[in-house]
Length: 354
Image 1: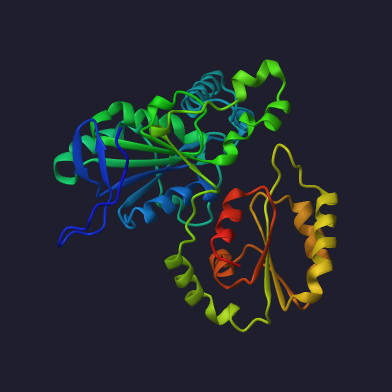
Image 2: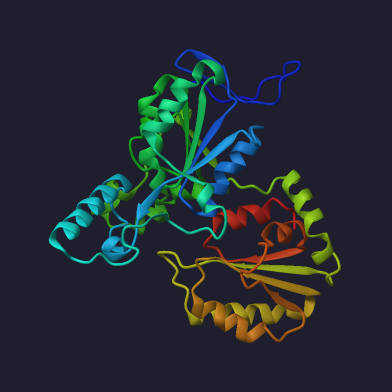
């Protein structure tokens, strides 16, 4: 495999990335993004697309899985197996006369976006590979970018079905069989289990199963944080869009982004109260404070903060209605307080210079 590189711009040609794969040379003019419905994962893919100069040349597909009934207990299964098992269970219910729970047969992305959901196509590896082959003579090779473990099966199947004309980039460590991908882009913290301190946190008999393998350098790009959308052009645009609402605010403007629980940190009332105490200590020095919650933020946490700050004239709490001010906050904030569960939010804020 030879690396992606940005070529000198030929006269009359727009910016694009060159991909050398299996001896085939082509100019990449189209990208397929395989998402999972999580904005953090999908924004990493779109951020890479933008960095390669291919904005407007990508199509977003999403991996979906069944929900309802017992499906909420089956998310540990591979997506393809989960769908087949769901189909079998529904057929058994139909033939046995058992009433299927309302909503059981629905197939949805892992998280539900409030807008634009109907316009996103479900990822079908065979159809995408066929499209890549049928249009290769006219459109050239296809760049496929996927992020998150639920997209691995579909993305690697596309590569297997159209090996010679697909260049596959997987964002976030896939944990196994790295030879399925042309390039893996992963943050350095994925390799924490390889450090001496990380090894001490894992029982010796489990280390070989849950420790990521370090692949050959030619297959791997390590990043300090996460890829994201907040480049200089996006921030300039957001600054303009949110100027009328955010520019008049008293300075300095402190933005507080609150995420959700992880396996190592459960979000409860104690954590909310600790955050409140910290904010109260710096509130005197702020002209304005704007707080926003993730979709993963537990309701009990958001309610505690709402009760504490909703009557404070310095503090504005976004309730999830209307346009999301996240990019505007990145463009206008003087300082940030961000919970450490989201590497994406931390990476975005770090690039603003605030």
